[in-house]
Length: 92
Image 1 (tube, rainbow, N blue to C red):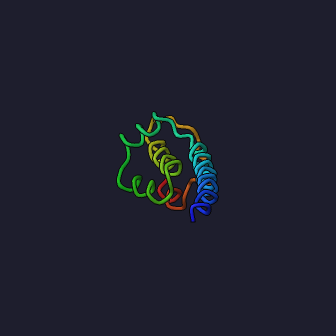
Image 2 (image 1 turned 45 degrees about the vertical axis):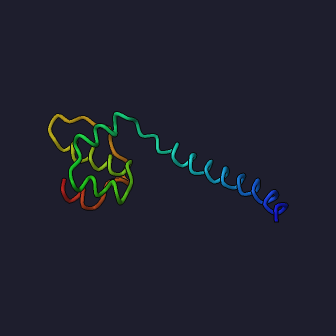
Image 3 (image 1 turned 90 degrees about the horizontal axis):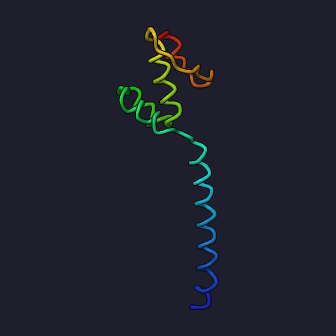
């Protein structure tokens, strides 16, 4: 039984390390700056928070920027076409 544990433990540890590397790679692709998070938390409404829970932070931030861009004088970068929903198009 001990011999089996000696063989299986290193293999399980290696599999765990490889899976954590994949998780880390996915998280590093998110690339959200601290300033963007602060902006979102300062200006978010209920529907923005709901979008955060359903769609993730990049899409929720894009929706927030779309909403704030509708205000006169607000300057934000253009959003990719895939992030604009039908509901957002109707609101504009």
